Amino acid sequence: MGPEKRCLHGSVHVWTVRLDAARRSEPLHVLSRDERDRAARYSHERTRRNFAVRRSALRLILGSYAGLSPSAVLLTRVPGEKPFFVNSPAPAIQYSASSSEALAVFAVTQSGRVGIDIESVGPFEGLRDVAQDVFAPGELAAILSEEAEAERLAAFFSAWTRKEAVVKCEGRGVLGDLRLVNAPAFGGGLHDLDVAQGYAAAIACEQPSATVIVLDGPLTLDELATKLAQTKELAAV
Image (cartoon, rainbow, N blue to C red; front, side, top):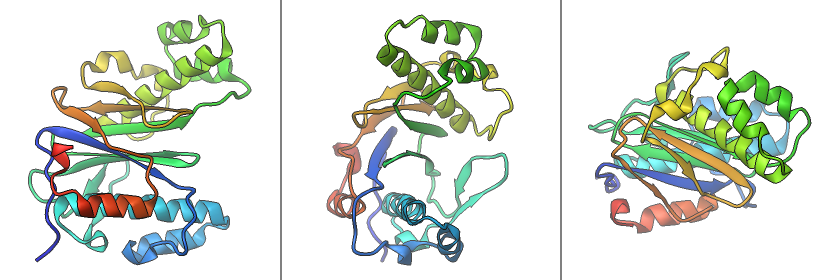
């Protein structure tokens, strides 16, 4: 008998995981052979570690909801389409993941497609030029109308994460012109998320009535495994 399945009941659960927490060893045993090979190809230790933690966290989460061991989770991706949980029980478990700097976020639901994005908020050169390449005139005007740098950065990254969340939810893959993505028109399924200080995050849900639940975090990988093992009904949190 496999692990107990977790319940979603029309909700979207968001987990936040730390990528920078020191561990005695990375949990490579839960990764597929392809994932282990990909991790080994990274020349920088930090990049290799972050990849291993992200993929391990995803497997821990999906396995917990599906009643599977993490190593039994089968994942695939068709070019230009959303990643797919091959052996998900019905109704299909949909997921989305994103990472930036020291954090990764994961959204999981059985209420249709979902997209999530996280970005570390900080100043950078050429904000105006980047904004002109990414945002439609109305979005650009709203960002540049902020006089204080902190507010302008907050507006930029808020608009950016919303747009990326919508792209991921719709499964459009890499777009040539992000200005064509009208995030505000997505409707009631688009939400800003408060996951950690210094980060902006957003989620787009195909089912607008789904309840978005941001679970406690950010968690280390060990803490995530413990939380998943201890929680009998995640929908009740």
